[in-house]
Image 1 (cartoon, rainbow, N blue to C red):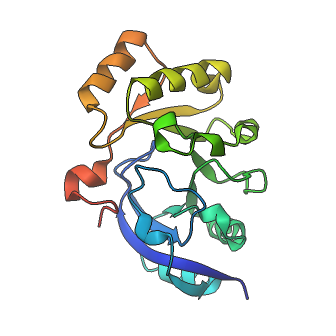
Image 2 (spheres, helix red, strand yellow; image 1 turned 90 degrees about the vertical axis):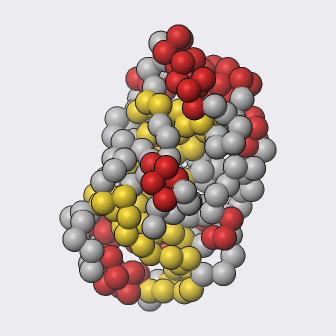
Length: 213
């Protein structure tokens, strides 16, 4: 039986991505090889509880929603993550994966909606970006840039152009809380006519926390 180390399973509104606002079940896997300076889920780095995939499926079934987000930590750090997502998809759920982009996504079921972070310079983890992952993105996927300052913004614009990302999938620009003024970022996007979606973290606006509980 495949076991996963799980920090929490909870039901809330999706706070980010292009399904923002939709009732969603979040499965937060424990552990992450990265240490981004803006991380708001450091409590998921360690601990958690080992749970079989069938037990995870049973808990998810309690909630009357078709949307599931598998997150972390970095969920792909656990081998069983891919099996879990495929089983959820086979049950008819719409499954999204929140991943750092530092680990290989090539084995992820193509039905999964990948929401992949590309780490900006101020994240402290710029060197961990796995740019080969871009080749595995399709039109239903999304790439997120967390912008903390002008350097991050200019770098993100450069990556956007270098890889023609907006021709491949949706692009999300998100201001780093406490470092990047959201209005200033929005104005830059409009001034430069970038083909990106500006996003704020809805759960932090509604509940002032990381999870949206």
